Length: 493
Image (cartoon, rainbow, N blue to C red):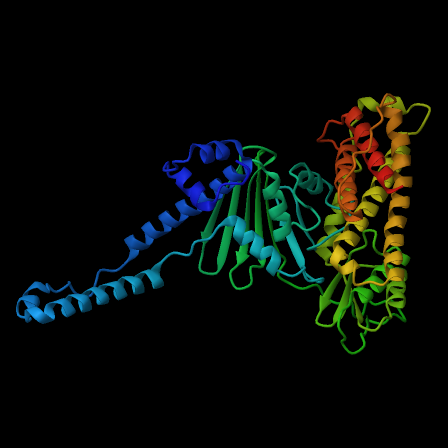
């Protein structure tokens, strides 16, 4: 059977009423059809349970039905047919009305998440989220590029294959859900919310719940349960960050006001991207870019005076507005605690291999510097690919496309330098690392950018185990991960 089973065939298969042996064999051997069957079965069960509850909660009728037989006996024979038809029509109309206004809302997790991702716009630049667990609590931007803060939580998210940079988003939840092979979905329809829950028997993360506001399908809360009983809640911080006022550096304007709104074009977006790249503001600084009407709004959080001046000076572009935001005290406190927590460390077996090369502190500084530089470039490259999909790139002139490719090429070249340094450091710990042949990635440069980002994140996670008191470092795996990134970079030559 070449085609996948239809929805009707899958439903018949679930009910044990499928008569076509060929289709049944296809479903049994097709993972995609079985996943669709799981989604349909979950939705069907939720529908039945909801309808059962509604029937139990329904009030009794205001009065009993009247027996129409006596009326029919008094009705002339020639008129009885019309009377019966009138009664039947009334009954059908009543049944339709009851069904129309009391039928439960059928919601599929896959369809709801797909609709939410296509409906919800990019997270607002000034939005904050609060992440809470038994051991940690931090308030941070909803989309965060920093790699050094919240190290323990970041490693935990990476181990679960859940996006740390934008955890309260439909895209992140959906990406994790689709990465799970065997899963069970359910949707709880509440008066104001859709609550999507996904459970799985495999992986570090056993259950994730995402709450979507009904009115606009915007995610407002996320709950994660890990297999080691770790639980994490992610919610909106609730209070917008305070704008810089009295604390502004001397001579620094609060905002670079935009010119009268014009249509945001691909050319304008490229101007902004090129300006940010020119001053290095696309490498992890807490800077968010969003569209607001006909204006591009740049929101920068907690920059020092020098960077703030550079940002405003480079973005004096018609149609662009710059907003400076002060960090909240809770964020500063969390970052300080995280830094203090890394000062104490136990002795490690592999440190003896550094003899004659570096001290532990020198080695740690060099490894962390190289991995941070690598991941920052990989993230910037991925963000550039997402900002300029093929359809938008086609709107640019030939000269503008050359600028876009030059920005991407600059990130690749810088990333290659970080990876070479990281490979030299990893070779001290594992001199016998085997070379890796680059695997060709289909599609254009955006696919290669995504691949580099995934490999860099995996390498960063492996390398961080060297300095984590809670993890056991696998020296061969670290070297192999570095060599995989190096091989993927060869595709850009």
